[in-house]
Image 1 (tube, one colour):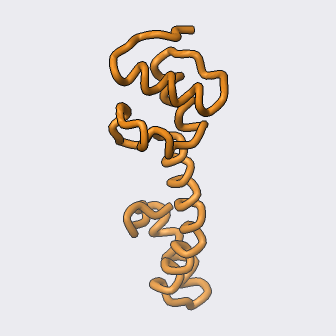
Image 2: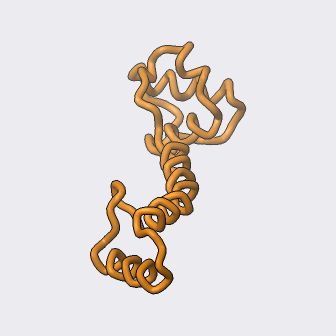
Length: 106
């Protein structure tokens, strides 16, 4: 409902009508609606972040080793490479591909 703290005009009117009907402060209503929607917005942001690869140097072994298996598999899948194997195998595959040695195609 909120987009940068502002309601769409149709919802703004609805909120105004409800606040007027029940004699409630409109600012307080807006704050309460924003409070209710905050966890949902935060959850959506977490999902977006989880499904996005980090902006890192994929050729640095120490950096690649710090990633989760899911992140390694996302990289490999995007590049059309085999995604099965242990984390060590995934790391090796990512580093090999990132350093320019094209191998391990599915």
